Length: 328
Ligand SMILES: [Zn+2]
Image 1 (cartoon, rainbow, N blue to C red):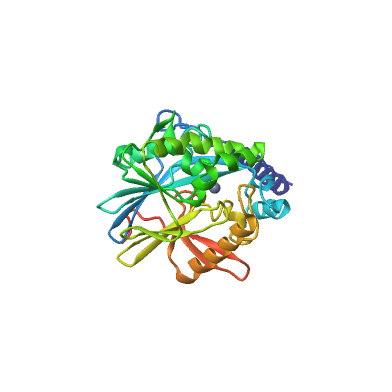
Image 2: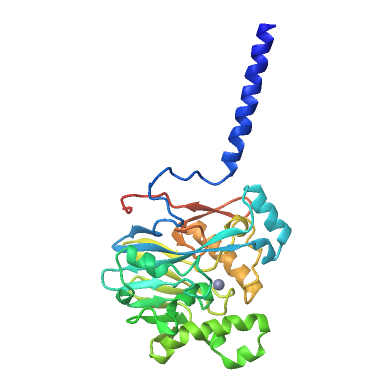
């Protein structure tokens, strides 16, 4: 009897322990009793690594929470992919920019959302400064495309954020987003993108600091634009190459990594040309997996640096191992 009572007691304590533990497992992290540096935000978001003789700094502009099942072409497949990964929607999608310091020039690939997307984004300048650079240090801004979360950080309050920079973009994007005729034909919902484009790109046009290129173009030594058309008419990637090491900054090839690596045919409502975006995604995923070069993605979880692996079905993402020594 004594034995039975004590085993019941053990069982009861075990179940109480489990019950007591579960709310803490799912609830917010406990606050430190005092101090401890705990604040409402992350530490500055930058991550440095070497690429040959170049220094690359991934800069976080913040995150954009999105229920991607509501803005993608196959909602049930999207929901299933996130559920299978035990991830809840909406999910916070990273907005990443990349600084390339060649030793000769400092180039910024994309600028984040500036003041367009609310307080969770628009962090790129703070993170640039935390990484030891000033906006005035930027010689060139390379836009993968004109969309609020890539070109929005160019200007704040109508003023150029990067006063010494020339902005480069494939001519097909300003031909659409800065065109009064195209804006007049656009649906009311799409007009917002036209307004935002004028708001943030026009100050550089007025200053004579917008330069366009046409397709594949060697812009600077070690820096080459490559057409990735579809998501927007002029979306471009930038191949960064130094001492035989290669990095492709591919803009919006992937918005939802839990879905689009495995099923590249799933598109997002922001694609101007869904079929074109899919064809480009398939082509570049196949090439990146075959050639094994590094990739940086604007919406892959920060710092968004890694490689693509071919799978039996589709592809997968292999994040670059974290390095405290900035790599080789
Ligand atoms: Zn975009």
